[in-house]
Length: 198
Image 1 (cartoon, one colour):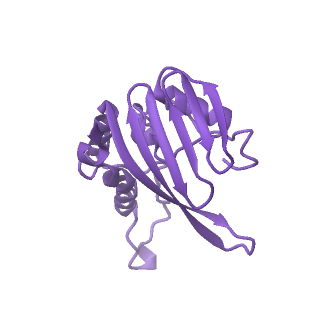
Image 2 (tube, one colour):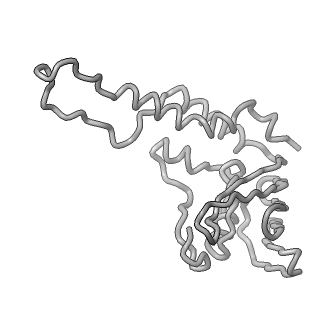
């Protein structure tokens, strides 16, 4: 089994940091210098590109990292996620979860999530997907498509199941598809089960 941390050193860090860095660089390159004298100021407006200009080397590294992750036959990792939710007083509260993830392409996935809030477990074996809530001792089972990528999309649409790390385990990363101008394999839409949240 391949450990994600050995796949490409710094790949996830690069993925998280590449866009803000390149956006900052592109903004610095398109900024107009301050005028020294009002009499020399031009009346022309500065044209700001509608999309940030991304460094080609950063895109190459990101694509190489994602290709290496997509080519992995199996991987296991721990995902720690922190998210905010408003409290009754309106101030945000930070919640954390820790997910133990084991994946084997094309048709195996196990995600066991603990942390603030209820624990959950998700299993997929190429034929069925199962979501289990241990505290309630409830399980939901549904037929599943033959591939992991399709299953994650179906799980999102039929049960609002989403993992914040799914870009790491799918073979076609939506961020790379957007950078390449290609089709995005799936999109996030409001789920009928989400009660007004995405």
